[in-house]
Length: 475
View 1 (cartoon, rainbow, N blue to C red):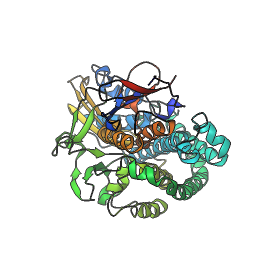
View 2: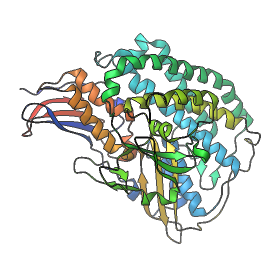
View 3: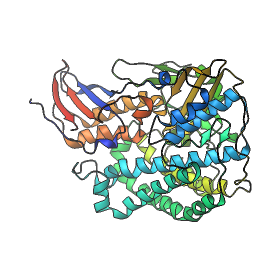
View 4: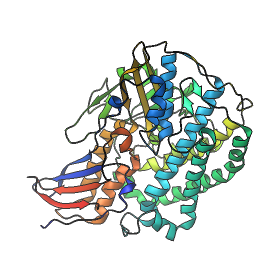
């Protein structure tokens, strides 16, 4: 059959450079499928020879969507190199900033990137299946999404001075205290944001009933789940210890100190992608596949310590007898975390010492290496640095959330392709579902890899002998 070009618009609904290849057997059935990340990752090498004190600001520039996540994980690694305990108020302020990052990023993922599929339909006209189409047909929902993301960005700006690539978080704490002039507007605007989050959850829980087939097939299979949990197993995005839970809800490993991550997490490379694949080291690959991010965090925690989110989390845990396995539920988990972030920000900003001016500990390099772990919007983020006697970086390792999820994303693409694609002809709805399963994970490919060039998503349908039967290529 002749090749054809099918436009999936907008390509920005996947952040970064990627393509999907789907391989057919002799009968035209899907035999294998791959999610290819075509960017080259080089950040670990870029920073060698730099003073460790520069690392937070440098690492914030890995990504324009979640710079705060890298800023915080990097600063925590540098805290360990300094061998200091940062002031309590500095930790509170970092928490607020991280929660604001999760708020704005989850709003971006849910409203801008995924709501077109949910509101307009997986089979809708791709020319309208974007945020502009949502604005036309569901203006109130679009406004809510824009407002939530704006609010998250405003919090970052009020604390850190600017919305993108701030340098406010530094080794030892933060470089300026919070003032009442910046705190009070946040508290005044919080009730509006909470109301948006609550009504979005209400309509999405009803909307999910329309997507039973997608729920069954969107990366719905047993894996482990991993993330940080706080004291007593509490949901926590800034601090805590690592926990692995299996598909039956049993704790496989708990209380793992971030400094011991390498005993439990290993990485491997595949020839078809620049994105590394992480797995649970004691089980090996592929048995050690696990997932991270909002779905994992709600699956592994024992409690949520804000009232409204705790109620929603309890309802979420009723989806399955054990952990929720379908990656379609990433969307649901993001909305619960939106609500949690707002409630937690309010709690932290109302702390009696939140305006305390002691926000930084000063020291020189006292340790030769440090590990920083925090929860980014997309999942657990690990920064590990080694320095020489002059405090210059000699080695760095970054394990990004999208790398943790890589194996599950590839298996999810295969599951969706086998479910929806039959024969040797593609239609747009099939392609969109293959793409949409990746969007449930909200991958950040610029974080996990890097290369200059244009954004592109290419989907190829191949016969058993490698002939290209059909291609979907963005312009």
